[in-house]
Image (cartoon, rainbow, N blue to C red; front, side, top):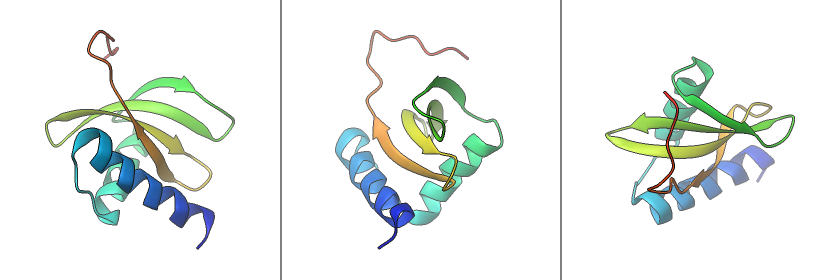
Length: 87
């Protein structure tokens, strides 16, 4: 299993755990494409290759870590109730 595959597997588990979303690889690729096309709100940079993005997906506000080197999602993070998301 390569790094990209490992990241996608982890993201799938965290989407289910934190948002109760059952996502396929195609769903994860769709979310990554939304980020690539500028359809998300940039939250912060974690490293040279990873950044946090907020976006609406299937009526759910989600926060994800995106890996631009591998063009895939790394994980899903919680969006806290008291946090305001810039639009």
